[in-house]
Image (cartoon, rainbow, N blue to C red; front, side, top):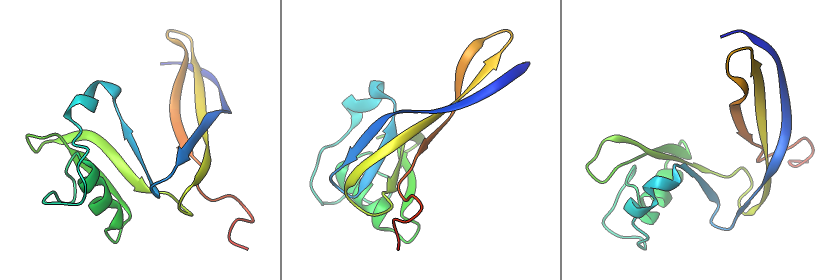
Length: 115
């Protein structure tokens, strides 16, 4: 890979109404359990699992597929709770692959938000 330059720009916003946000592949949404708080725990790929994971001391973690293996998604507590958060993408320009996204960033807390 021969990266010739990088560029970071805002690509949109994510609204948060549950104090948390999930990063997952849309192809896995059929496995998502939209349950209320119940018997699921930290790391379960479900509403209750996401809540348990973000309420843990780290405020973030891996969600597992229904069979128990990792990779279904990642859930994090948003910085200041509910809100409308900007999403930034860093692009790399590669001589073989062209323009590709190398990094995604959700900005939960900006300068001045905690003043």
